[in-house]
Structures are given as C-alpha cells and as structure tokens.
Length: 506
Image (cartoon, rainbow, N blue to C red; front, side):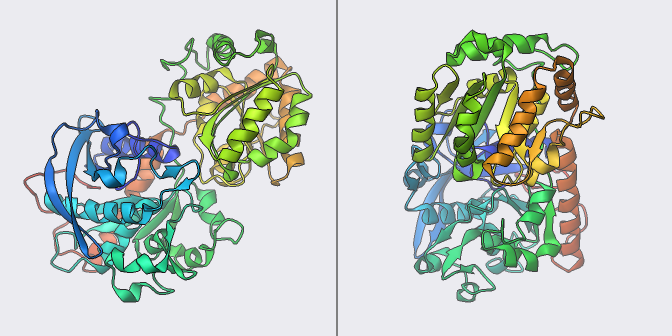
C-alpha cells in the first residue's frame, strides 16, 4: 500500500480512514500487507520506531540523488508501516498545504515519495505481488513500474492498482518539471501524462496502472462523464475496461455506539436510551441550549471545501433558522468557509455551533448526539460519515451522488423501508425540500425510530470491500503471469530474508 496518509499516524480526511482500515481487513483474509507513507514529523514521530530500519537510501530526483532514512511502525501486530523520512519535504504544519493553498513544492515532495516507495522494496528485499496506490500522491508509481523496471528487475513481476478517492485532486504541475520525474521523454504526450500542456500524476496512473478502482460503483460511472470527470473523462472512457467501483467500508471497531469510548453513553439498535444522553452531552459540549433536546439537532462533519455543498447550506440557512432546531458544524478547510460559518454562528448563537478544527472526540459526539446528518455534496466519491451516521441512528440527508447514492436509500413511509433522505438536483430548493421532509417526520416518534433502526441494521463493514479488492488482486496478478510477466510458480514471490510467507502480498 502506497498512500499519503494513514490513521492513526496522519489524517486529513477519509483517505486516512481507508489507509488504516483496508489493510487490516485484507490481513484477516490472509494477505501480507505492508504500508509505505511519508514521515510527517509532527504527526508520527512518537508512533514510529526511534531508529531507522534503512539509512541513507539513495533516491533520484531529477539530476539529484537524495538520501532518505526509513522508519518502521506497526498498524497492528502483523502489518508494518514504513515511513519515508526527508524532513525538508515532510516536516510541515500540514500534509499538503496551508488553508491558503497547496505547498509550492508538492511536485518534488511526492515524486520523491513515489521513487522512495519502490526503492524501499529493494532495500528490504520485499517483492510485492501488487502495489496498491491511492490518489495522485502515489500516482507516479504505476508509471515507474511500467516504464523504468527492466525484465530482470526485482519488481518485474509486480502489478499495480490505482484507487481514485477524489478525481478533483489530480496532482497537476508545470510541464517544465517533467524531466525531474525520470520518466522517458515519450511519456510526456497525450497518451502519457501530458495534460493540457502540463503534467498530471493521476493521468499517469490511469494510463499505466494494471487496474483502476474508485471508492463506489456510482462514482466509477460518474467520472466518465463531463459533469464529474474533471477533464479526465475521455481518458477514463478509453481505460474503462480496467475500471471498477468498490464501496469503502466503515471501521466499526472505531465507529460503534455500543463501545465508543468518546460518547456520553453507549447504546444499540435494541436499546436506544443512551442516544438521549449523547444528545444532551453534545449540546452541553458545544454550548447550545438544552431546550433543543426536544427539537431536531443537525450535524455536519466535513472538510470545508466547495465539493461539500456549503454554498447550498448558506443559501437555505435562513429557512433552517426559521425552524426551531440546532446545527453543529465541525471542520476545517478553505478560509472563505471559515469566515462564512463563523458569521452564521455569531448571528444565531442559540441555534448554531461551529468548531473550525479537527477534533476526533467531538466528531464521535456529533455522530452520536445529532438526530440528522447533512451531506449535501456536489459530488462524493464514497463518503464515510453517512455510514457512521447510520450505525449511530443519526439519519442522513444526502445528495444522490457517488457513494451517497449507493449507500442511502430514501425512506418510504408507506412501506416503512429506507434509511434516510435524498435529493438529486444540486439546487438549494432541492436540498431544502429533502431536509423539510425529514423535519416534518421528526415529531412522529415511532416513524422516526423506525428510520433510525433501519439505518442501524445496515452493514458496511470492510470485510465485503476487502474481498472484492482481493478478487481483483488475484485476477490481475494471474493475468500478468499468463501474459508472461512472471516466470515464477503460482503462489507468490520467491522467499526473501525479510519476507514472512503468505499468499497475496500487497
């Protein structure tokens, strides 16, 4: 697994949750998984081993050779996490940029990471069957495996999978930087990583990876259209034969109201009494009046970005506030949304609480204490909070896009089935209509409890998703062997000194 963030070591959003959960599920299926990620000093220093397992590993970046140290930690007793340490690249306050914008040297930072990840395999004598790359930060790895690995190389039999978590973030940089990638000149072309006169890490991965996945079936279809494809729809259409959608799982070991250590009282589908205490605790925590105990309390936990539908929320805020309800928002992101939400909280101090930060404990309290959860996203590749909300009996109100469409079925009052409320058009009135439907049903206690219980019965555990990934791994590795990509016997790579033998190494 080559990935730029992994919970609990470093996290900005759902990518880290996947990085921390999918390897655990694959390990339970018999895969040997190792993870490689950057060493972000302020996040992982206390979690990694004190001494490097590899020192002064040479990594080429353009005409330079830059040495790196590699540290090792543990995700659990069997999964090792390797940290690529180069402090001038990764010792930063944030992972990818400040609230004002991306770091100026992200090209160098993640080109270096991609090269170092493959150098690490050689350094520790690990010969993976597959390198599973996540998002643009690891997007050059499939290109390196395809264009720079010789037939006799240690990694000649290795195949690559690339998962698109969010196509809006592609890793686009100026064409003049291309020589620093070390890739052959012919790869800077319309059939390679050239993109509207520049270079594009995600396009490089789409073109070169043996298999491509997205984090929901609906999203794999959406990104092949002009509306959602972010100018890569044509490339994805050309490579549709290797494109698959697998819904992310939810980590129920961490997000479970029956055992959650962060919430005021534990509860279950069979006994919902604890949720009352969680709502009271949430109101007290964010300093909203306790009179809201009998009124709808809406929650939002989100990256504050254009994607997440905050323009819709702003457009209907006066309609929200005309009702007797509470709204709790937790997130960090773009300055314009920091300013906008802070102004709303100041204008409606008895109804709106805004926390402009990342607070894991408060996130759990919101999931447990809110009655409804808002996700009016312009697009949503998968989404995880709607799955967490279902498990906590917090009814989701979502836009019908990507993973939100795949996971939230609208409640049907006649049949008593469905788990939430959904709207289709990205318009304020459409969002408000879905929210108003939920608000109108909330006073009907028995009906509302039925919606809650329907959601709590849903199971989006990682096991099912991991099984789908494993099938793709095995199919892709077998295809390369049939094509002559490996002369080894079936069953995996030859044993190495640093290699505990298990089937399916990633």
